[in-house]
Amino acid sequence: MKAPPGILHASFSLARGGFSLEADEQIELAGITALFGPNGSGKSLTLRTLAGLETPERGRITCNGETWLDTGQGVVMPAHRRPVAYVFQDARLFAHLSVERNLAFAEARARAGGPDVSRSDVIETFDIAGLLGRMPQGLSGGERQRVAMARALLSRPSLLLMDESLAALDVQRRAQALNFIEQIPERFGVPVIYVTHQIDEVVRLASNMVLIAGGRVEAQGPAAELMARLDLPPFTGRFEAGSLIEARVARHDDRFALTQLELAPGTTIEIPYLDYPAGETVRLRIRARDVSLATVKPKGISLRNVLEARVEEVQAEPDTAFAEIRLLLAGQALRARISRASVHELELEPGKQVYALVKATALDRRLLTRR
Amino acid sequence: MTGEAINAIWLTLQLGVVTTVLLLAVSAPLAWWLAFSRSPLRLPVEVITTLPLVLPPTVLGFYLLILLGPAGPIGKWWVSATGDSLTFTYSGLVIASMVHTLPFVVQPMRQAFQDMGVAPLEEAATLGAGPVDRFFNVGLPLARRGMVTAAVLGFAHVLGEFGVVLMVGGNIPGQTKVVSITIYESVETLDYATAHLLSAGLLAVSFAVLLAVFALNRRIPLGAGR
Image 1: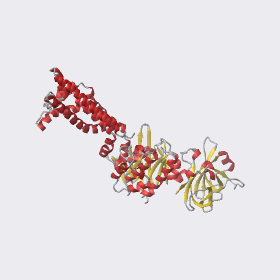
Image 2: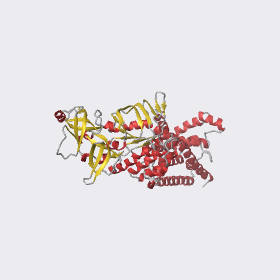
Image 3: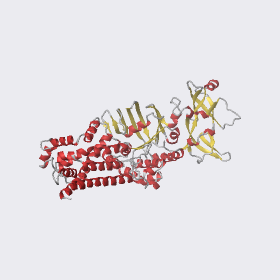
Image 4: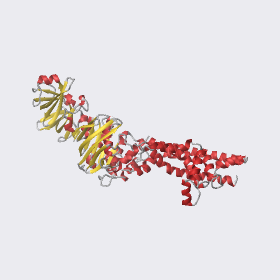
């Protein structure tokens, strides 16, 4: 099942206790859209506004041609009428109902004309058959989230909103939960807006991304594109800044436990052995600090990934020793963070051909995802 | 025990049950509104529902007498609608008891709704549950501990009522003569045997009801979202 692409248009302003939120965005709903930004940037408030849990002072929200809010016309569609389900950070299972009856609650109120989601589907997808008779108080954090996702989908929403749903889980549970979330758009035909401040979750899940900071939307677009842009504030901190690269698994080298990824014909990168079949497309995130530059092809070095690239943009970080360089590598954007002194010495400027030296061991396996 | 005393006991228990049931029905939506409304009227309404707690029963009884009397606005309407008076009748007694006991039922319910918080209600809304649906299928069941407390306090309070009953209900055997008034009358006429019997009876009943409910409450496995 493929999620039908929808258009969400949200333009509103809202003030809550000294904090103000402004948005005017048109978002194509397909797959998973990450709403990404630091804590306190207004992500949750945005999600609550979309769900109808907050009513902005003024604004207009339409989704697939249906008006959810139009303060000019005095239209405020209440939350229960919007075809939207919400998975809260704290899961919010009904304490007086068993897991099975929590599911039944949503099923009984399923939206007419919503996607065709059945109880057996969600029980299987989220692996909760063994939990049906239990009460929510007895469940672990991960189990609660799975039940909450299943319950939300059973209400047959046209859009699923998820708010930092994994924040309460430990690393291992989070990784498991990501597997479940990943499947939602394809399997149930429901697009997802996913709020997070974890960059690895964005890399893992999102095709599109909306960056939000200080109550303002800074940028939105395809996740890979946004992560390569230098003009955006350092959402993840300079240390973690990086770029998303798409590549195909070309072949495995069993002798040295390496896997060769092909970015484009003739451009390959070697990483430690990756247990994916040849031909599979993966996304990897390369941190800017793990990319060095050279103007001549270096010889006799241990680094195995030496790639031809072209400088697109040079941006000095004010008050630091560093500069960020945006490179074009086989049609994809790659960021490097090197010292300003090196920029000066190597005479780096847009258009210059360079060699990008990428540390293969620096590729975080967590950041490697199947597409 | 005299027939009159038995009548009084029966009448008191009946009044307790009827008042409590009616009060629960009235108080639940009121407590809900007090817990969640952002209306500027919330504060004055909260004060009004708390007033019976602090006013002397005679003051409350006096105003009720005026309101419910055949010349009062409510009493007049009642007479024209039913042909019966509200003062010194069982119906009037029920209304007076309800007003007098209102805070004892509204407060624990409001507290229970507040403890539950808006989180489960928001969740229910995003699952497609409308306001009435949320009230009956999420709010009430999650706040049932508060409901039980409210019912017990209300019932016990009605049993012990004296001043308001005397002002509005008078002392008509089988109609408005409840246990507390019978005890008072017995003491006045030096019939200590009846006074003893009824007092001990009221004490025992109150104790038993509270005991049963507290024990039951402890066993109800919930805590609104906790």
